[in-house]
Image (cartoon, rainbow, N blue to C red; front, side, top):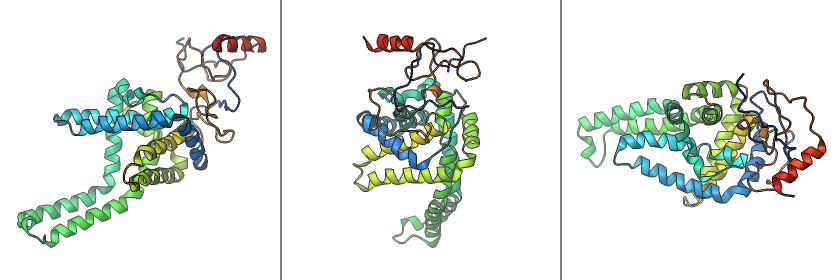
Length: 322
């Protein structure tokens, strides 16, 4: 039988104080209030890399969108965005790095398709307004009204319809974003295809859809706070908003148990944020999971093998130096 590549290795040691070892069947519960505590703990430890990665992502995506070869930009931008969308949950996991935004290249097909399909779904609510605006613009152009100082009524009808459609569509877009919040983690961490990840995210978030809609709205307000500060604040508000988003993703994936989460940044650089469940993160077979508990068997439960406390202490000493 093939080894379970997501099981912790045999060299596991006890998790440090404050970590919650959650045995999850695959998904967990969402707690909106706890998201900000988790996000702040992660952001305080990794704010420097987070801001740097945000600037790098903005630069790379700008180059992609402004590419002379438009087809290259259309192909590249969704892949970069998929990696950037993983920044928050990687920050919460305590393993954020410059390579995070390039994770899309690990699974280019699913990364591209999941991003494009999600974007199409987000655009659907404003299509009626775009259609009316297009008709009004076309009628105005046919009448030569676009050359006039005062455009004809058809143009203004289309323009107003488009603006109204945006305001009406925003709650729907927030709702859709909440339901699809797990798409990219499912693509990268659980190996799903683009459409499969969309369906699975929709299924998992069914019972908590209204709170997730509120969560996306709050994250949007955090980002807008940066825009209000003459765009300079976006450099900090965007990565913090990503951390809030990542906290929700980690909760829903069963990596954090909000009921037992203890606030406070990780004690050692590179450790996951306190309260994260390392057993739900992929660890290749044969490697030790620094924060894992006892080894898991094929059904995902703890092995009955007991570890001698002295042996566990020796493992600690060997890992960190006597």
